[in-house]
Image 1 (cartoon, rainbow, N blue to C red):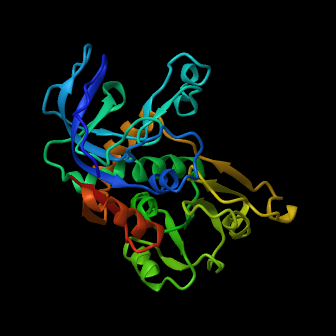
Image 2 (spheres, helix red, strand yellow):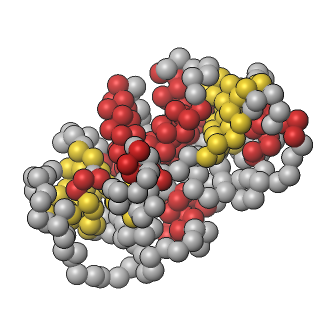
Length: 312
């Protein structure tokens, strides 16, 4: 912990008084040095719920408004990806808590154009995980297609949200946890999974698609073996250990493997409008800000059901 002056927002920016900030596996990758070229020193955190406390020139948001600041903090607006509705692939982006300071703090700077308006009556702790676990989970689910049977590998913050959306959509959910994690499997069933087992097990039915939230490359061949012909495996994380060699027969019959990168503001608007309709109920464990390292360690060790959230 250290004290810093309150940051000053520049043109188009807002200063947020942080009410809650979710602890994401990406924060763990940043802290553990698994992602290249972070801004150093860095304040992690990109699932920020806060109040606008100050605004720079050109900002229309009212002081006191509650907003969410997600992973995607800024894009250039003029590269080929920004011009083609693929701002998640921008050539010159800024990412909250990675290449710009984030929300493991009492205050944070955000671009007003990349912040999402949030309701006045919501619970900041319950809402924080929606800003990455929810958004990336939603983008991953869209990438998985319209299949009925969805496998979720790694049943943490994102999967426990996606499972609720799947059930609301009338899909079947098959959850995969670390082998022997009976508590995690029970949690998955409580979130609507019709089957839960270890990642070393085969599901009782072929999957139409599988989403991998666990950053374990060895799960890619396992998921390919579990999906039907024409099925898709979606890698939902920003970092994954190396994918081992596997026989071509696992990929044959038009199975495919795709990755999901970052998010777009359209993803955020879609999902934050959808979540209250489901309604999504997040399972959270709150930590005071000065226990950020304990929260990260609990996430690293798999001791959290749902999502960890820091509260200044």
